[in-house]
Length: 106
Image 1 (cartoon, helix red, strand yellow):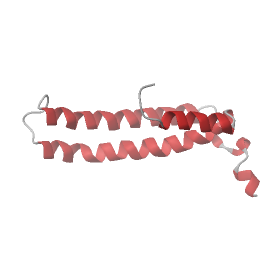
Image 2 (tube, one colour):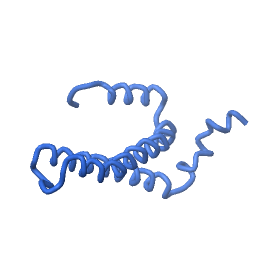
Image 3 (cartoon, helix red, strand yellow):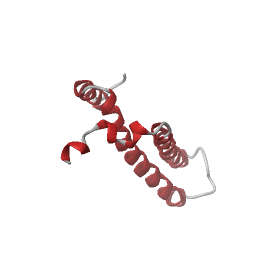
Image 4 (cartoon, helix red, strand yellow):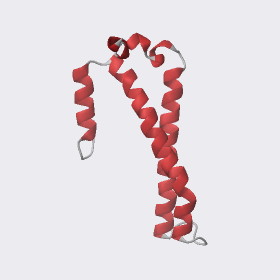
């Protein structure tokens, strides 16, 4: 029973043709939503947009969308990791994750 939890053939992303692309779309769209709402607040802080609204109002109006986007991106990213681990060896995943976590330009 425990071995079934790690069996790639049981993962729904491997068995359904549309599961992986749909999860990928949700991941990218939710990340874009978070970045967009954060950019709106940043532009307001710089005084380049929405000058008729206070910063606190813009922050309050975008907070729910930002947090929802971050939560969805994290959840869908966690689901996508299960599929990536299926296609790549453990060493390749470890190297890629380490490389992505390093600071600096790529």
